[in-house]
Amino acid sequence: MLFLGGRQSPTDSSAEAGFARDMARHHAQAVEMSFIMRDGTTNEPLRVLTYDIIVTQTAQRGMFNGWLQQWGLNQATERPSMAWMSGHGHGVTAAAPGAMPGMAGPEELKRLREATGKEQEILFLQLMIRHHEGGVQMSEGLLKLSDRDEVATTARHIVEGQTGEIKLMTDMLAQRGARPLPSIL
Image (cartoon, rainbow, N blue to C red; front, side, top):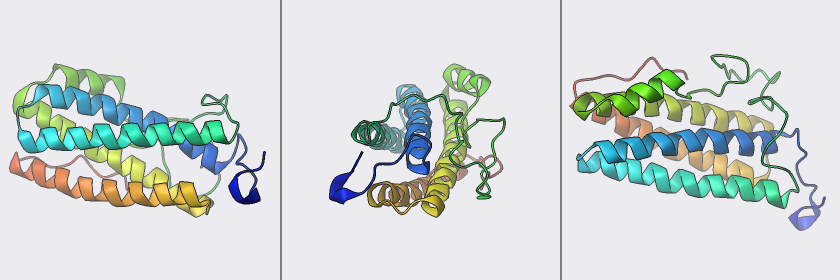
């Protein structure tokens, strides 16, 4: 299928399609975690941050899914998560085959839901910093594999935006007398 300007659409196994699918799933978890925190805190700066994550990443998820539709590709695939990065030597490491960097595990999400007060705020900030580090890592990986304008521009925006939010969240943790989890970058 031809894309705008006569360019070929990305294939099902392309870095662009893999990035769009995986980042949509990655963003879904960030939105879920942000709703948990938004509903669990009265701290206004933290509520503003969660609102920003919810709005920004929900909009980007729609964009990723729109690209797939425009390219004539399904949102779901048989390919494992992160397959688009495998073999490219870009330093993306996952906890398990097919795992995406920075994703919280089921037990961590359970702890986040059950925590309250300052404990929940600290856990959210620690998990979201690691989650954003994973998003930055995936976006930087895409930039090494693709120069497709719409995808590369979005990946650069993710790197810039999430790097800024990592700094903000690190400062918020310090205000609570806590530190980030060990960096995955």
